[in-house]
Length: 253
Image (tube, rainbow, N blue to C red):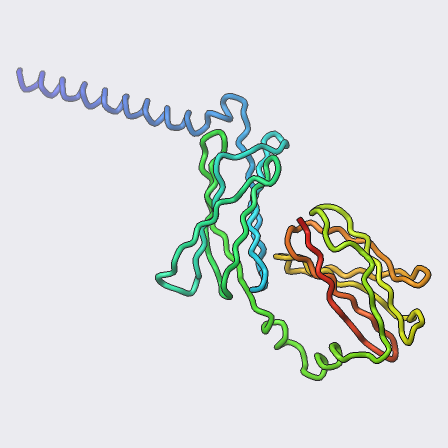
């Protein structure tokens, strides 16, 4: 009789434990879904890291946060990176600074190689966002090996009597439009040619090309620059007699 009571008591204790465990699990689910249950939407975080960056430029890490389609600030944003091909690679961590409401940015000068990493972001609701990132830092020899030596000599050859002068601003704010203007003269006279610019922004793999319009004795155009850092405006001048290009550096802040 005593034995049966003991078993019955143990059964009640076990059932109570299951009930308490079930309550705990329900509470965890409620905590996980608190924002949805309370009508709040989670913070939407977007991370942008360029797939390729040249070795002489800084890698730009950027994170943006939106809540109900409005920019909101975060508690903490950091990027952790290491070389992918090294077994015992040193992990480097870069804390991002607030650039404007909801936008954070970190910059790092890294050696050539393939990199892997993680971003660590804490939002104002106490949630931790983390995911993998990967990118490549390249040197200029990767581009040069794709060009024929004669072609390089042709592109960089000095054209006698050719005079090129950049007339635009050399410093601007990110997100604004840059009016571009060049004087192109041959033997003291305006040159008739196909003139275009190649826009090389830091951390942007795809280059933008823009054909300039001849206006009086100038070739003019307008381009939007969105990435902070040193942007290269590469001028291409070409006709039946010559093919010339030269670079103009623009500081984007």
